[in-house]
Image (cartoon, rainbow, N blue to C red; front, top):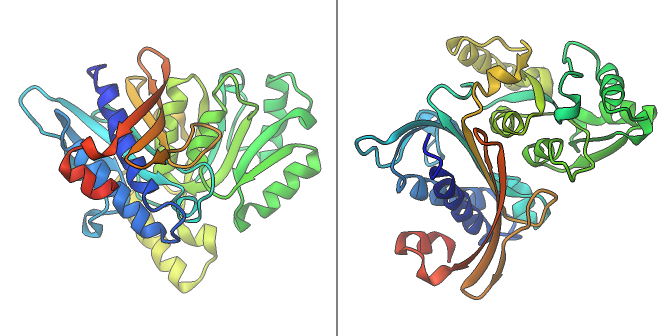
Length: 338
């Protein structure tokens, strides 16, 4: 994959972040997400790639989202054939409510690089390089915490674990706190939390949550590039949200979609099944101020962004701070971000 594509993909997430920022704090997460999707699609279709969305925001009948199987790029002769995993806004509710840690994010790899999975729940356990051999989802969360603490040569009371502040995690949060673990429970945003496990300057030691499969695959690309580790398993909706007739019906559809893709719900997925190669590009631009990247700042027609770009093949991590003259963007993009 051409290394110069990294800057092209950074422009994609910058545009999505600027589009989402337009709707910051306005209370409608769907409008914000739709604007980010529109900007991301527009920019992807300007890049000289033969691209396919393999992790997106819905199936083909759920347009205008960037759907699984959608073709993007100019597809000119000789263009790199790539698979793309996207989350135009990770943290739509945070964007709508003006809360921190909302980002626009994508991962790109050669064809076949990423696990193809339905948009469903996924249990995830993530650590950085120093504890990469210490996790095993077949063990209890408590045992994993003990093993990670041992690998890091830390007392359990010195360990910091990030999870999501969801009712489904209440028991796990109480159990971790009872062990003496420092637990940070975020409203949303497990991609950023996962990456923080691998950042040298971060205090985060481990991330555990049940969140979205798309976010899990995107996280895996960055985690593999940075030398961390992750295990995951797909979970049906009725096993997460309660076994009501509605959830059971949705869960059965998810199970059948997994079977069509050769996946087994509940099977432990190691990192090399989630992201099968180091030759990936990961890019994330902050919409709101967060622990991973700064948010958009705008004054009139001038905006600044911060983008984290990880090139897996070289192991290079870049932070790109950009100043945008919004009224000089292409007319089609101005229609979305202004």
